[in-house]
Image (cartoon, rainbow, N blue to C red):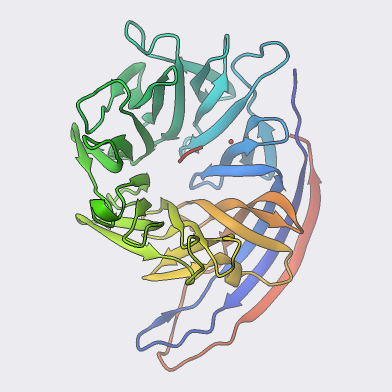
Length: 387
């Protein structure tokens, strides 16, 4: 069974200068181009070359977006005319990892390289044999991280490299129902994710130099006891989500041994004061999503940079047709991928900055100057994470 996918590409050039006036230097917003990756497209990862991978809900297939085209990555095996796959990570060599259907009802992690999808399988000779594996990220050394599951009981975070599997364990005593999962890895081989604790909660972890470190939570155990790390950059800075004293989850930035609450875009009606950080690049720019001020708990994509949390929707023209709901990843060029609504239709987006942020005098106040031009709407040939 061969799946093909449709894409309409719309690129807008955007100039957005926010109204900013502070006692110190202010960073003005950048130019962006906005590329529509297609309806029901959910991007998960972008490398420094601008190649994007993710999942297409139209056909339950993983995709690679490169040079303006969406490519169906296929599946490991089609059973009874059904096959499913999702792509979650891509490195700068263009190697892609994710999961795919295989024999029976199992799903296995895959490595896609040079046009071929390789089944990473599961470790042999132990309790994982015959179960499930999912790959969520890959670094430039080709080290793959993700989760192994044994039936419905538990999962284990892993590192896979050169045919060898390493179980990263949990914070508890290893009782079978305790779980862990790895979502990110940097080029130093440091891994982040979440793992069960001795108390039965789940905390964000950093795995480095053979040790699993509990990163804790933003609040004390009496206020909530949950955190999960989604991404780590090459400086060892980590982002994710944690419970707070207010009883809701907030995005966090973990750096130099301290966990910082990044807050939310605006004060909201409880219980919708929520935010989550998905990715961080080496410049310390963080992307994710946050609830906004309305009773329905809608979310907007955000960019955290230079100590400021910004709604990405404020950096694009109000009449562009876009509502950017979630930002999933950011690369070293500042390109951002995510999902939202384009004229009411669920779509994936790619934002590309045209200029670097500049400083303006502290007394300056620029009033929301927005300029845009449609560069093109081109019908391209027809062609899901975790980070």
